[in-house]
Image 1: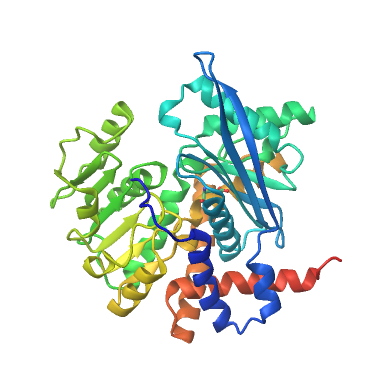
Image 2: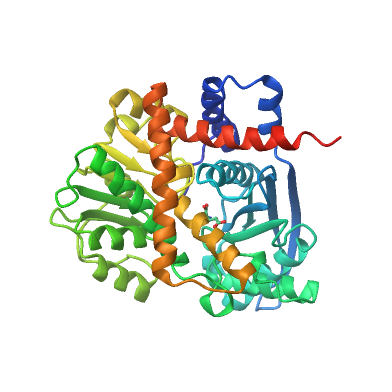
Length: 419
Ligand code: GLU
């Protein structure tokens, strides 16, 4: 779904959430100043030649927001809506996401302003290789470790890893995560974000006495996050009543057959033409009858206009930044519980961390081991967030930021400011 054009800074809005938690922590103004400035923002041109012979120039970004807790970590997004403001906000969120699940990473994010739907595979490869080549000095297993994000696949990670390894004249699988299994990827990484989301959702549903066998779930987005979340919800016996992608939304009160939907999406590369549910509008899906709502597409999905109309009791954020601060205020007032992005979609980066660990050891785990460790990390930290929320009377989002900021601040204070 296209991001609505809004005249506000996404990074500015992200800072609003930060400030709420910083107030709870009574963080001093100096620390606030440090934490609301990215460490490094890199912008560069990516000239490339189309298959037709024509030359074009795209813009590439990498924002390394924080190194306080370890190397930078965060995906690379290929999308027409990529801007420096968006990449900075996403790098800022990665900082808190890694901290909230206690991974030894800082936060970073990258992107290229382009539309992969209009690019051939070899054009995509040339863009990826040039993007990687521009970043050779500033990425690496101990510097900054990219990963997939919107429109970037394990194949894109393979090209990135190969380009980097060629430049440094050394096999370096740990420079990126989300790689194919054959070249140092981790079992369970592809499904990890969706799996993490369902782990958090089911645990929260138990708290709210929402019976998984009866709860109706609607999911916006049918990419790597939404599709695997839908599959795993269905596997646990939940009824996924609504799904959507850029081409439209599909609602079925009896439950959409997720195997059919994913087979359709794989075959046609979208849900267009899917007949397993009534076709409704994308906006309608968000306000449809459901108990659990999962935004798993892009930013700014819930806003001042639609927040009052949402019927779900629980929202689990698969996308980064789907809720504007105005909508968050309305949800709080209406008693709608939100598992925030930095917790709800942290399964992906957690298994990225496992991949990085396995690459460094050169020893690979069975899928069951990956999934077990993932569940342990997510539930331990989700429960900690819940305890903070009830102690402080805060939302789960503010509690998650509080936990994450506290961890980053402790690291910063121990290290001190180098001058
Ligand atoms: N792009 C994913 C995210 O937003 C994964 C990042 C990673 O694995 O480093 O969390």
